[in-house]
Image (cartoon, rainbow, N blue to C red; front, side, top):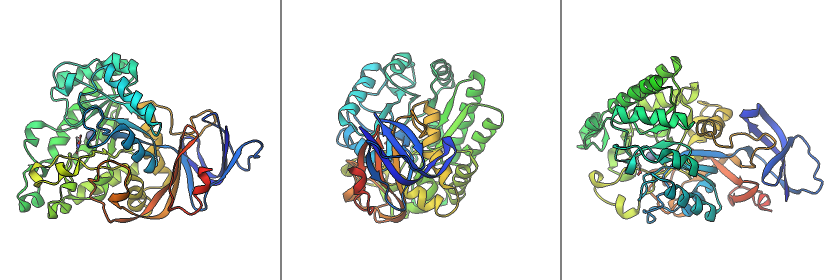
Length: 436
Ligand code: DOR
Ligand code: ZN
């Protein structure tokens, strides 16, 4: 079936497009993208006024929790949250139960994602068996089964030797190693960023240097091995310095920042809300500002949510005892537009690079482009929509967000995956016509 998206502004940085174009979709692919395409036998869908057609957003850091922790999230609920948040694809972290450290788990995840039929799912395999940091996992086998990267996310790869081997091995297979950077001895049993705020509140600290040390180490190892390292959820200004230094000397290093790290600081800890407890922790104003600077100047490659659903009962405990992590899929667009684009910190085009073009490039997956022949994975953004975050309306199975009640400017009108309109936002005037 042919679909013609008619009359919208298209921003497609990979192909240097920003203007009014029609998009013809045929057989799940972009067939043509030109001004004023004839309808012919296509089903015509008017793009609502004020919305913008962009390549489908890709969240390269999501915890879908299945198998094993389905009370927090399932692949079906997580991918429903993804499409509601404007994401046509997500890469999912291996810290499930069992850990995704072998092909059978990867295959299970892909089969569940297929059944759900929503966002595309790219599994990320573990670096080490059980993410225990001892022996390498079945990396080649997982690659063949469909994994696009490896990580022990949730924990760092503690020994330099194992990280070296992972970079060498993943490098041979064309995959990046995604690292959760933290020196465990410095992190200790910390629960919040080490600094005056944590001290005043009586919370044990996690120094920023715990992150920076491992970024430095991994950048050095990537340089040594010629492998590719991607720094997950960067939060500390010293880590950005280490990434920039690596890029300057030609090391294959990329990094991501999560919305909570460019929006919030550790001042949010004052109420002991466990929905501001995440790892790495919220840091200082200087760090938040450094992350924004990196997003703007190109030293940060991607915005990724670290969507980490936890059940209400698990979060509804003392700060010390709560698990780390917050959900992010359904608030990322609103936070990015409200705090970065509308404030003039980054351009609209840069936001699409950070949320689509670069994640596709880093993971070497399709997407990030609306060139003819590309999969018709398309997000229709409503950049001026006022969105009030209402946990009761979220598609995610978990509600652990610190942004409840926030009103932000920037939303999603519709999400199209492989030419199928999978989400339409009833709050956007005229969007229902996109559903057909
Ligand atoms: O806050 C976090 N939550 N950080 C991590 O590294 C892991 C994640 C989780 O799995 O809940
Ligand atoms: Zn994570």
